[in-house]
Length: 355
Image (cartoon, rainbow, N blue to C red; front, side, top):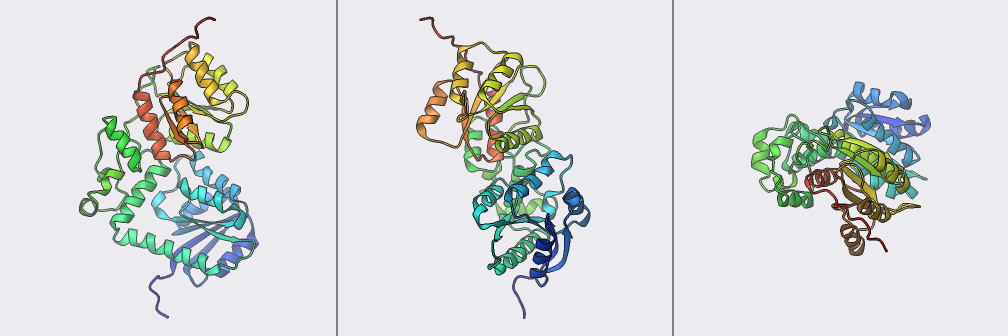
């Protein structure tokens, strides 16, 4: 039977269960040209680099294991080339939100609900063929949409290109212009093998989605800016640290307001990413202390919160915060806000008047 969507190319199945990997292989045998199984997780990234698959299927029954596997690329020097494959994660029904979060953060390209019963086998087959077709279209003759998508993907996962980190949202772009940051043409974020004339012809209006933030300026010490990340959520804390470190900043992380105040009294930082809701001393209390005490360095503060309500924002800004960002945050927007905050005036020391 002739089909409009051809079979995918080479598929690599990564799993901690041989039986699950074999099941996926059997389901997709008519939907791809070759299937390779990788069930030794310590060697999986090496398998991806060596086999150069078109599609990587992450088959873990716990999405938290999938997330841990994805994070390994950020802990390694020289992650696999981002445009060489598409990544699809299989997840149980009760962890759909976690799988969506992986997609939202740019760690995977798609997800398929696969457990507790595999009653939506066509959805997996469709996802594999569609991913293969998208990748092949990009390789053969990339369209404007794919050019933009891939430029965004580079900005999300690598956060730093030759001329500095790229942003990918219109909100970040507008704020960058307001701060006087120059735009780059989209050709500056062009993926490998994408003709420059295609970008110029296809998307004059889409270039507004790919503005660039400046290269990190020198911090107060004259070296790279030093950022302290304060969050009781380990996942958000590590994600923020990896993001800013890949963009060329120095970073440290602590998990509580108490630890933040302690390290801020002994070390000099240029910027604090401060979570609002934490047990013990919360972010607003830390911010109040930073305003009332004299700490080393020229501090700026970006508040991080899952609550973007107007009152919370106003409270933070009144206490001297430079900016705020909601979680889960977009990497490119975070880097945009960090760059702008470092160019802003530091917090003013305002000691509490004696009673």
